[in-house]
Image (tube, rainbow, N blue to C red; front, side, top):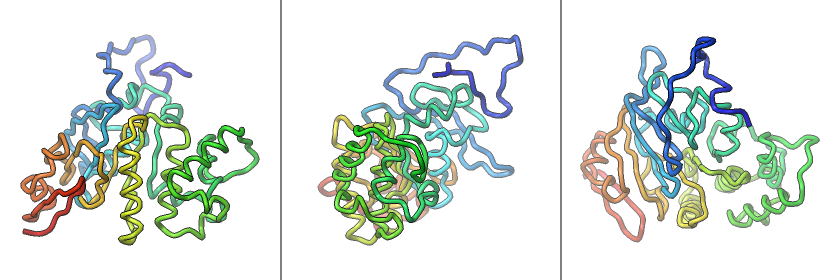
Length: 287
């Protein structure tokens, strides 16, 4: 593996012969450390002055309306975007001073952008197992029996084992989402990022997915998790923390029950809201 600093973001190379200043050590318990970060696409700040930390045993939900900066933050956490200002560490590595291609192999990601790249004629099993090679679409690469067995076990866990030989393009939206999450888990990642996993699902498919994600969240051997959503009803049981965003800035963050208050959610969505919590699930409606 290349040492940190071998690959830099554009515009971040150090002058030849001048050493980079020493950086304070990052706690090994921190899987994400965002420090006073702004991302700008002139003239707009997509996110502004955000500081946020995720520890290895935490399960976070990032919640906010359209345009709040949720996906931008997830792109930073998945090493697919660099900050305009501030610093981002992911799994102990600082963006701009690490080979992001190697770093991404340690992160499981399920997103609409990745889903759009999956060939519709690929089998469900191959959609999952090809994550071992970080490719989308099986070609001539070979996989050992352990990879095939892991893919099968993940499909079983996500309720997709009976459809392993089906073509991805023939699946329902809920089945596709479960396949994508199995793929995200294929490399046994240290960090799992889920960008609106329940988007577009009907009520039954949403509830099935939320239940399965709740089981995963409560597994002590599961990786740290970050889930992005617009809807409090999509927060699975077992999630521990919340980050609320509006117009690129933090409204509130912290322990889930302390953060998901009517006051905080009303500020987040710009509408007076009532919030209720029962059996590990949240609901919200206009006051």
